[in-house]
Image 1 (cartoon, one colour):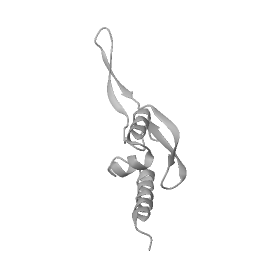
Image 2: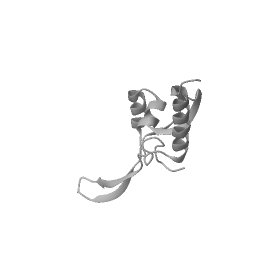
Image 3: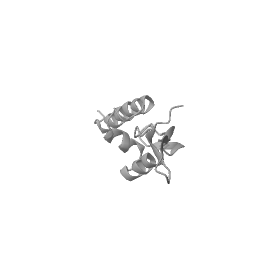
Image 4: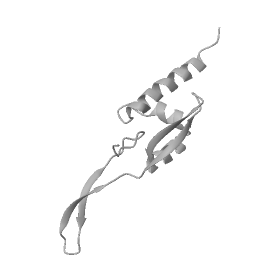
Length: 100
């Protein structure tokens, strides 16, 4: 399983450990990924995602998963989230259309 946030696209970073003697060795910085279940109001279902702590805070700040998906560009989202975004958009458009 890749260590990439499904919502923000945040992934692994590379840097150096620097010792007291100023020796530098390569190391990786991994994102703080959590398995969470987020509720989609438009779909009325819950979705299990692997999200970074930063991404989870961002979703809560924007006002929920549906708002986050609508406002985020597709290049940051994983394939699962792009499909979810498409489904949410269809539901929101159908809800806004006048019933005749």
